[in-house]
Image (cartoon, rainbow, N blue to C red; front, side, top):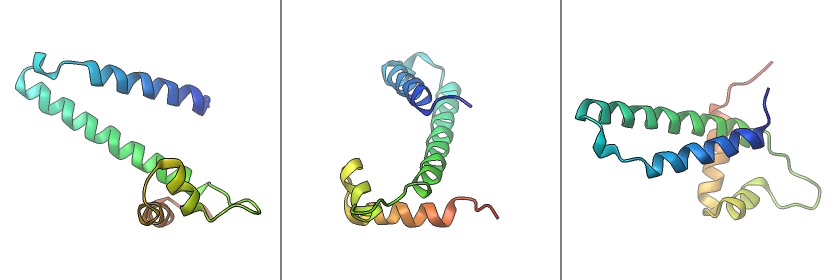
Length: 95
């Protein structure tokens, strides 16, 4: 199992490369395939984010997780609450 920091660094580098890539150089069918692969990657990232969100812990003296998440991610508190709710509902449970 690799370091999450190393994996995130690699993800940042890959996203930067994709942002700099010229999709115009691909034939039309390959453009659709590229978009399909990007969509798959987005969905996988959301699933991983849900899993990681369920592992967040509230520490004594800290605000509730949705409030901290809203501040860290710079999203509304309502959006943060939805993310926490979605994560709780969609992450596989272990018995």
